[in-house]
Length: 500
Image (tube, rainbow, N blue to C red):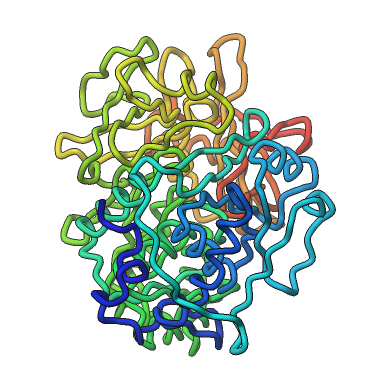
């Protein structure tokens, strides 16, 4: 098998030892320095005697720790530093790491106190040794164990084998023309697939560079893209904030517009980028943001190609090596380009299973090996996939219709009085489910009324898709990646609504 990180596992053949691999603020590590630091750390990881946890702060120490574990052939378990005590205790108990890797100055919570600690240093005096490069482990060997968000119970550890990481990154190389000359800019968390696998291992597999902003800012994005950055990865919240800055005619907005216009690729993921933000960004920069679709368990499934046609609201066709189909609730295939069905996927990009959960693993797959994503979508005749939402929270069955929450949210966002919007369904004796809109008004002092929003949606879409209830909020609840946490949106917790 080809090494997972060729530029670090085959240094003599890489030819780019002096090239910058990663940069965090003023700290830059070349491929040679990253390889030496990881090489010195590798024996300590191997000696721990099992998988290792990584205290995954947005730092160079996290990158060195994960790379060292991958070179050692030892699975790494990235830990979100913001995880609460109970959830963190569950993850540690479930994954049973032999040690925890952290930066010397990191203060770890009590639940990690019993684990042997391995400090990861990146300063000028840190011990460094390339050492002999181990033989590449088999393709089925676990590379990472990434815990899901746990929306339906305690988080489950998705075991990601080396072949899945390689397959996904190579498919993106094909789709996006990703090369070692690319310089990726982002500020994503490093405990998740988006920031860690795509945002760090992606550049390192190509022999390219990644510049992490640490904390997201429009100024940071503009600075790094203007200074040689070629690609930007972000989540919708980040792109929304960039669009807000671009709307300002000031110096920062002008500089940002120029920097974004000069980038080779602008990519949004982890949630749907609202169509109106697509339009605002394009109007200000002349560049289209492209989207892709993936999950912790599947890594990347689809993506708009760099040489393809950007189509706001879609996540592109399946990537190379990925089979994708839509099915009805009974498992039969859907028919028609407008038909909504659950996405099922199959390919080398899939995880091996949930750690210690054979029951959950079995339930996640069909008998013939298709993974049940739980995401609902339509597929156009040319293969472009449009996600309408999660089966559990975004598919609304009202008056005999199957309705996706996403298109109603985009319609609401087209109203000038709406800053943010989310749509859910709630039980209704007559309709089965009624459509509920959760709206952050552009002007809190003069929010748009329920009847006004219902008429607006009915004119853009159709009458049966209009919201029957509207709740006005100060903000929508979001997780670390900007996804709206719809399970937190309940009438009981947010107060009375305004019927329409």
